[in-house]
Length: 210
Image (tube, rainbow, N blue to C red):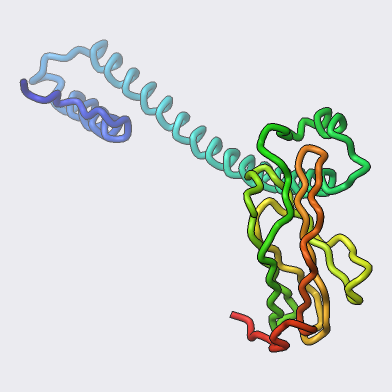
């Protein structure tokens, strides 16, 4: 079966119709077209062209609105996730409150256990890179990172669901201890054994930034 001579894409059809209407006017006598015929062809061609152009403009506007919406979604979800991690890390916030906030928690993902394999690397930019093993904790587990300058009193540094964290704004070469514990659905593990950077048991070297 021969293909249709009318283009399927709207943009191509608009060009085709514009040419068709113009040639109908040019060869009206040969084609036996009346002024009524030409008015019908020109009128419907113009209507389609106007509607196509309006749709195209609307698509461009929608594209811009979609991009703006995606940016605002990214910003607000990042903010909400940051606060949610803080809430989960706060022992004063009960599972009931977390549930009321709509922060999904799971109590059927196995026990919460202490992370293992903690390592800390000091970078010349003042960033201390901390890594550890999940130790079987489920993907919904939040890991709380704490630091100390004396190895005794530890303070909150950050909360993540991955198994690494970068602590920024430190003084390269300054001894600092880190430890990590896991928390999920209102239950927390014991913290892992502290590991020092630029201190006892560490290499003492300052690694250059990549």
